[in-house]
Length: 420
Image (cartoon, rainbow, N blue to C red):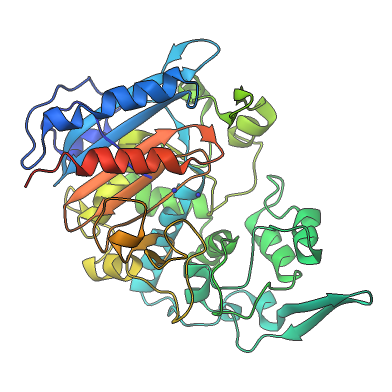
């Protein structure tokens, strides 16, 4: 679920971001950004840590490829009082989705498929999907799909798939099949998914779902490579994202931040190792979740976001065409379909290909520009790219459930510092 960031910074060009750890940087002027106003981020983040709402966080604000603010607050491990460092490794959860989206768009650019191709052309079990219509004492009533699920449907969450959600019969089937079990590979996951009825006719609603995980399997089928291999060779290596992947090597485990649940009543409670660590160790995870399986660092993910901000290119390496980035970051929802997410129900946000996009700033939760885009993650990470302001925001933290408040505060504190 969603992302963004800032802190004291030298006028550093983004190429240096791949090197971790980096020395602390002190504020110098980035044109059009007030260092004095950006400093307002510091007491707000420190207050969140003092109140026990977050273990710690890294906030980065970059403009026109230069860091205006980058700072860590709080702890990587609260119990051990281990300070959060610049090279900390985070679970980015649903911020994996835009990475999978980039992988899909790279294959689209190569002519491997079209966005309106039926998925069944590449994954045969999609040919005869059924849709849940109603339920009675005699059981579920299922009907045929009006049309097949397309790649476009997967990219924009209008496929009819789900994450399980309500405890109705369809939701119970998701729970029973445990689709994203780490002992299941993508091929097996997709076969299980095809045996579950769709929640609605393709293209008629938006529902957050396993669509991005299915896209991960599509990447494997079309490219002939495992998803982790494709991402490493085609995205991470070219962008010099040196600490991003589906696993944390043993030699880097000391940099892996602890993850916490939060409730107002109990405060922060650390996730047990079987939930927080085991799935990221080599040999303990078959599930290459294109919807939520990656780990990354602030510097790595900033390079990815900056590539998108620059229209698909970074440091002379072109990942996507500028037109493809624009295609990803424009509202792709059909007429009458709205994003069932904050700022979406009232028309403020739309959804592109694997990312939300601002449609009407006045109808969202705060600052931004029409056309800014990004997403967040279940542990409150988030990033936002604003092409109009040449701005990238990134927040990395490890607090569940995802908190909208930190997004709104960081976005507010970043935009109020823009003075041109």
